[in-house]
Image (cartoon, rainbow over all chains, first blue to last red):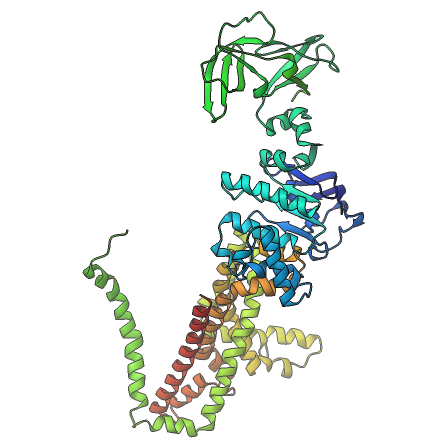
Length: 345
Length: 273
């Protein structure tokens, strides 16, 4: 089954927020993550697909069929909510069996299928407990089981891990991926956590102000962001305004850098992107006459365990870099291959 | 661990409540109890032998069930509508809805007579449309009309009781149920209703107790045409046919009905707790 948005627009009543001209396809077995800041429209996209709101324009397609006019119950999509939305008055197996109950399946069969599904997420031993007796991670597993037990046409995950602590989030991330791969189901993941999106999605969509800014693999978004906003949202970055000063040269506030300027005319305004892990630390003498080499002092030093994230104060600004080195730095070097030119902001 | 209050502090805090409880509950109930048995308990025998009492009991039980039930249904619908409003508008609407609680039963009755009585505004309006004012104007003076008038001040009580429970309900559960295949009504019945049921039962019990004991509205609207226990009691203390022991015995029956309704509600709450 494929899930598809075809030129979909929706505006919230009494406002200008919404989503605009969105076209997007999630293939069979594919996990597509939508990222973006609060209010970017990513949750609205999920609501449109789930049928919780109806599009003003465009079509919502499931396996090629327009379902834009169908109520949520007729779309056969499993939804996992940020707060899990388990039914507190039902036991775990009854929660998981609820979609089977509304489909008229006998009590014995639905209990058996619900317990089997709970087993797939490692919760079969708690089948007769109430949701209140579970931790957040356990509730999340049950919500996932409930969303998958009726073999839906697609799985929609709305910030499923944001209520969990960091350790459990990583564990659940792997769990969701395992179950999703096992089910081979088209999945839409809405998250504000870019690390979560990059680590489990086949494709990532970046949204801003209700519009798609970039669609690509996690690698595409990180390595070749469409603009400075994507670069800033996905991972850490150095972004400097600059101008192409000649063939292979770009001038910035911190100095002139040597890089590939193909496609940019001399004099063109650009944003210079350098990922911190691509900056090379210097602990000894610094040759500032060399393009891309800067002397500086450490303005901030963040210990992150395996690496340190440093802000190096240089003439004209700061260079952020990440290094395994433990000793003080005297400067940094930005190799030409580490530089990517983006449109000016 | 929080420090324990001293005994004298506890007594100090409890005393005003104990005085109010003694003066306004124990003393009157004691007096009524004494009055009911003043003639050796024969008042109860007279009540048991009086068909008007049994009709009044039946009328009270019907009114004490139907009016609260209707009020709970309307109150839940109103609360659902209120929850869809913006917070500021909701507060304003809640104030307007709560206004009937400040009126006495007599004022409510006269308000309904002015609106729906034989020369009432709505009755005359309906007469313009061809409805017989003798029929439409008589509605408010019937048992059904009395139930409607009761609901006027029972509905706000229901709204005030059920609104917090419904407001705290996680509406994502309804969306989850819809996405899992349940229709809108089914999701409400199977997912929301069980969770707000304790507050619905509490609202029913409270409004039932109010309806069973209401007196002013009934007297003003229907006089003694509709037989309910409060009006039967009134007839036992009116100038003609005064029978104070029977009135006290009737009072005890009313207290017993109210206590029973509240006890049933409490038992339900505990069974769910």
